[in-house]
Image: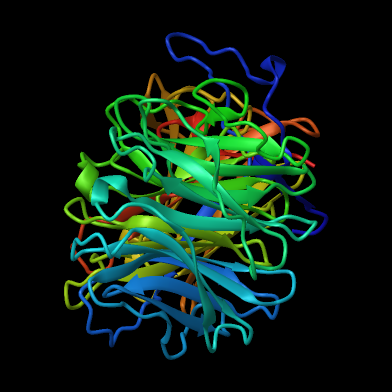
Amino acid sequence: MCGLLNLILAGVLLAACSNSEVNEPSDSVRSVPSITGARIAWDHSTLQQVSDPASPSNYNGYGRIKQLQDNSLIAIYESGGSIMSRKSTDEGKTWSNTVTVAEKPPGINMAVPDLLELKDGSLLAMYNPRPHAIDPSRKFGIRIRKSYDKGITWKDEQLLYEAGYQFENGCWEPAAVQLPNGEIQLFFANEGIYTSSSEQNISMLRSTDNGATWSANPEIVSFRPGSRDGMPVPLLLKGKSTVVFVIEDNGFTTFKPYTIRNTFSENWASTVGASGSNRSYALKDKLNDHIYAGAPYIAQLSTGETILSYQANATDGRTERNSVMMVAVGDENAAGFNRITEPFVIPVNGSGQWNSVCVLKDNSVVAVTSTRAFSASNRTEVWMIRGYIIDGNTIFVGRKTNSQINASITHDDKNLHFLAKVKDQHVIDNSDGVTFFIDAQNKSYEKPHTGIFSVSVSALGNVAVKEGKDGNWITFSHPEVVKVVSRPAPDGYTLEVSVPWSMLGGKPGAGARMGVNLQLSETETAGQVPIKEDATGCNANEPFSWLSEKIN
C-alpha cells in the first residue's frame, strides 16, 4: 500500500463536530452529534487477581493500586479485618508476598484503605477502624501508617480522628492528596458530629511535614444539609492549581457521583454547600433517579483527560446489590464525564464493587474491583484489568474474551484500507471474523441508513456487505468490489480489506470526520453462538457512537 496516508483517530484529537459537519438525514432517520473524545479499550487477557490467592479470609476487597516513582506497583486492600499490601514489578502480571500494613485489633476491623506516595518518597497508608464489638471504648476513626522502604515495612501509626462508637455516628473512607507546596490534605466522610440525624459531611485534615503531624480539628469542606456526602477521593488537576474530589451524593433519590472543587487560593475557606459552582454533577448525561451510582474514584491521564469510576446498577437489569464498575472519561477540568465503559465481564447475579482506577506512566489505565465473579472458592477477591487509550495508531477490541483485534486504517485516492490482526487460539472457520462498519460521509445517523456500510469478513476471507436502510441492514448488491486477503497466523489470522471510496460515497476531504467501528465475532467452540464485541463505546446499530477517524 505504497504512499498511503495514515488516518488519525480523532476520538482523541477531533473536537466535537460543528453543525456543518453533520450531513442532513433523509426520510425518518435523524443525524445526531457524534460522540468524540478519548475512549478506553479494556483487555480481557490482562485480567489478574491482586489479592493473595492463599488468603484464608472470605473477604478481600476495597483495593487500590498506585504506581511508585520506581515504576513498581503497590496494591493495598482489606482482608479479614486487617490491611494488607502486595507489590508488582511487572505491571501487575505477578504479585509479591503479602505484607501486613495494619493488623486487626480485638473487636475492630481495619477497613477501606487508600495510599499516597509523598514527595519525599515515603508511603502514606490511611484506613478506617470500624468496631464490630460495640463498646464505648472502641470507636470509629481515621488512622495512618508510614513506610520508608517502598512498602516492605510499615510503622509510625497515628490516630488522626475519632468519631462515635456506634455505626450511625461513625467516620469513613479516608483518601489524600499532596499539593505542590508539600501540604497533605486528607479527606474523609464524617457523621460523627451529627448524633441526632443521619447527615454526613466531608471533612479534611492537613499536614505540612509529610504526615508527621496533623491539624487537630477537621475542617468541613462539603455538606449538603439533610443528606450524606460520602466516599471522597481527591485529585490535583494538572496545571490547574485546583483540587477536585469526587463524592457520592444522595441529595436525590439515590447516590450519584458529584465533584467538589477549590482552587489553591480558595483553599477550603468556606464549606461547599448544596448549590454553587464548586459542586457539580459529574456525568455529562444525567442518570435516571432510580439508578444507583456510588463509590466513585478519580484519576487523570498524562494527556489531561480525567477518569471517573463508580459502581452502578445501570445495565442488564441489575439491582443495587449487584452493581458493577463503570468507568467514564471527562475533560481536563474533571467535568462532562461520558464515554462510559464496563471494564469487567461479571454475570448479572454477581457484583464488582468498591472500585478504583490508576493511570500508569505509559498512560494505560488499571481498573480494580472486589468481586466473587472470578473466584474458584466463591470468595470476594481483588482483581485488576488493563485498559488502553485509543490514540490514533490502532483500534483495539478484546474486552469480552482473550481473542482480540489490533487494527490500523490507511487510505489512498481510490480505497479505504483496513489491516486487522486477530489473536485467536481457536479459529472456527466462517464463524470467526471481523465486521468493519463505515460512515465515510459523516452521516452520524441514530441508526443504520443509506450511505452507511458494514463489511463482514470471515477468518477464511469470505465477504458479506450490507448498507443501512431505515434502521436495518440490507444486503449490498455488489460485494465483489471489496477486496480481501486473509492469512493464517501462528496465534490467529490477519485480514487485509480494501473498500473503494466509490462504494462509500466518495473520498472525504482533508480534515473531514469519518465514523468507524470494528466488531469481533468469536466462537470459542464449534456450534456455539458467536460472541460479538464492538470497539469500545460503539454500538453497531448506532452510527453516531462510532469512533471518529479524521482524514489527514
